[in-house]
Length: 124
Image (cartoon, rainbow, N blue to C red):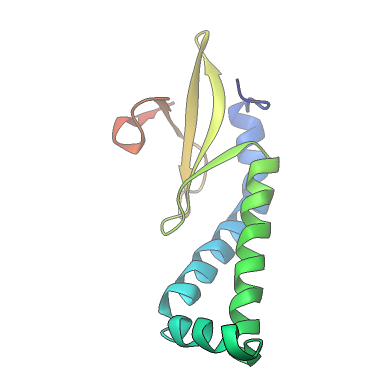
């Protein structure tokens, strides 16, 4: 059972903190994915401690881990970092469902059953 259930109002109140966090997660993942030197850095790191490229990758990885941990502390489920898709546990008509929100949306206005995902989104 989830530790935190959000009302629509509570979910919307969290958006000002959530937006920059998700934007940073997306940017960090893109930076890690675009870094074409990962294999070379890993090879060098195994021989000499890594150097600056390895330090940069380590910092990106730490940032990503810290941001994902923050989402876990808030009790949120990160569905798709590339589009900033988040689910909030919510109780609707006596059932546990998700409030569904993604970057670019001004408010939390969607929900879906636990088993359907974004394809099953319905307006509140």
